[in-house]
Image (tube, rainbow, N blue to C red; front, side, top):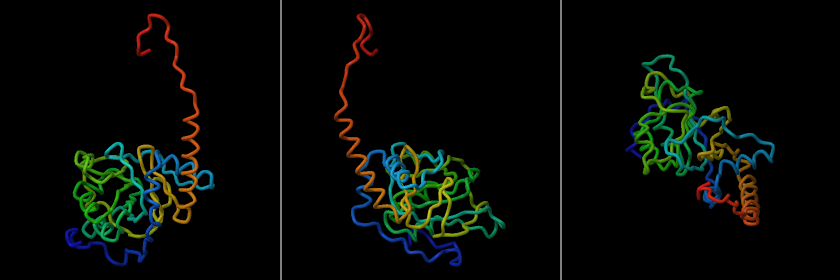
Length: 237
């Protein structure tokens, strides 16, 4: 882990929270579902829970998908630029393998908190994805095929050093208006981002799998009807 560099966040800002490992096979079963964010959203709705993040979080590489327990970092505007620290490397060091790094800035998009080096450090630490309620930069690199998936509110070239300060690691944060606690399951794809409370992950998965099986049977039973083309109409009509 030395390759991630030295820690910068004071220990008083790091909560001693252990993120429990998901049950064996649970993450793989979530990722086997098509449109996992939609399925998780429907299951949460049936349970009377709301974990759907407001629109705006987009993957740097379209087609990306991720599912994993959250580790969290909360930024605040820097009171003293000289003393402000960034906490992404510390967050990755704390993360269990397969975790999703959730970085909350309160919607700050004027300065980027993740770039290509940060994403590379996350991948080295075994993080499966990053979701930022704020901005990223180095978008060309982040959209490459071999970079771990990153979601954000947008891209901006200015960096956050001296502008934002790591206020807390391993605490509750709000990601696009949704509460995220360490260990909650984060699911994201091109449809959006959904947060499944840790105590509901198995119930939500069971409902997703049941719904997927039902939809598969329904689609198989739908009749396929060819539309009759008027005489002389082009073949693509």
